[in-house]
Image (tube, rainbow, N blue to C red; front, side, top):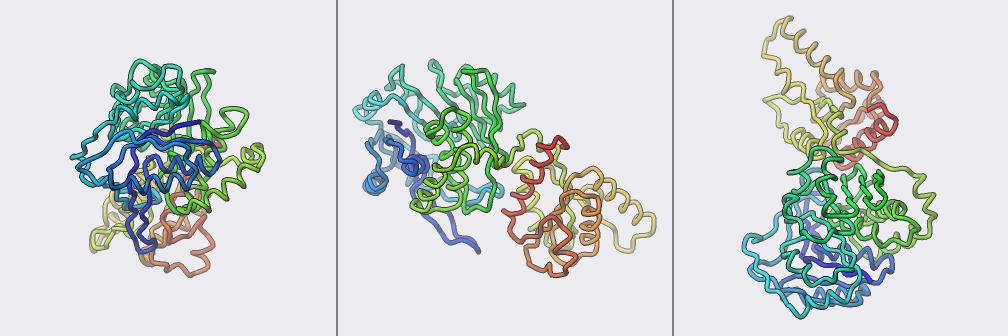
Length: 437
């Protein structure tokens, strides 16, 4: 039986124009939902404020948790996470209320119960992982996700290598240490037998030190409801899925993670997982999916066709570009790079800006138009990019695209930024997997 170790929080996804406010248990409960959905026996050892205990116990018992152990009580903090943007189109705007005032009282008797388990899955948090690991038997298999509260490799627990170390490209430890995958793995090899780098919608790369092998596992990209806790689901499925080998477990994990992103209702999630578990793994692998390594994305030069002028409200353009850059793509804004045409510009100035913009378009391998209004320059650039044969996406936040040439010529027209970003991943993944990127 696997035991999940970590914080339990209250996740509050704030309401937007398109989505209602949603409040549910988070932290290691995301991983618990996945184990429950697969009918894998599990226990939970957690840290949380006392006021949450009865709700946590009720929820976990309803979801077949075999043992519930409170390792420590949290004070001076409500353990509430506000989430501005659930889908991770860009930076999600997490805000952990009163996180600087957290104090934890550890229950030594409860910590000693960890020695009863032969497999533990840690998700790092506000607790002292080194203190907790002292109560874990030497022969216990220990996996760990270091997404939170670990800022550099030197902070990782020393003395006992993890069975699996999970790290996300959005984590502090990745962003502070990253150079390339090989050097990143080399720095982590003393700490883990297997290293899993989760690259968001671009799949995962895994170094399996047991076999000295590296794998690339695709993500399954589709319209989603949220991305909160999806990485935790991927973690636990990849170590507990009923498959014949580790690579197959990883493939199934990517599919289950996709299903978790589709809904915030546990029963719906479990029904989807049951259907997945009935599918032959060969059929799931045949679907391929999205692979786009982090560093490759710097080759993804996206031309932003838009009325990016000083006299226009460019908030929608800024949000798109921030989202692209969050995912490590390169947004090229011709007006920002080449300048804005002056009022009453002469022929030489017009020709110079035109040539500079066309040269910039030649450097790019995708165009995204932001259709704030029917700007002639933007519309012409859409046609030029489509004629060149590069992916041509139209972000239409105001839903004004109705001309058939405008709706049918581009690769995609959408008023949903999440759909635009997902299409960026899938189109560049095609180029990467075809060897043209």
